[in-house]
Length: 259
Figure 1 (cartoon, rainbow, N blue to C red):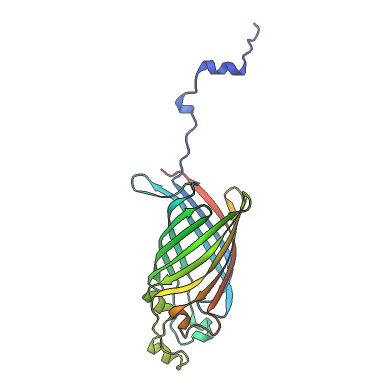
Figure 2 (cartoon, rainbow, N blue to C red):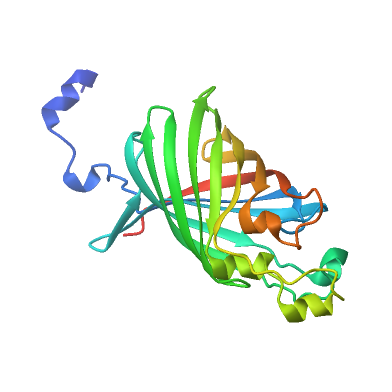
């Protein structure tokens, strides 16, 4: 018996595929970018000496817990955006810094909070407020303006001015000198009470290149000028009010459907 030819267009006469064979829609609940880099930065805020540092990268782009939480997400630009914010300040060891010998060490300080931004076109006005704990306690944050230039589909450059601030508890830990601490330094560092307020003003520039889908090379450079109590502190070494940092690293974006 001869075979009966069937044209491709005739498959439609058999109807749509059963629902169980239909492609499921992927709706991510978690989009997070994780990475690690190396940099060159002051050994502590106000140090005139620089050294290598590790730079972790944690960027939570989307987190959805059905019925409980929905933050971040979306490629749509413009309007308000909300995201978590994190930062880490490394330990300060007096034994490693001759200028600080006699002062107590400060353990690493971790901070977590929220970032709020407002975008219009290539510009974003943003603010971060984080609670610091560990070596120092208090509220810290940043206010800034970023401009974004998408040079190619893979290459993006972001940069702009920024102000950093901190409450008195945090400032006094890093920039204050107690009477006992002053005595321990032999009077080399005078007693000083640091006030809360603006800590520094500066500029940030970062470049991001997507070498393959969801894999990025990140480079950044920043300049900050310590001001207020931070600049007036005896902990700040001569000429070290100007602080520079550079870094480069690799990161990977993970997109997961958890629920």
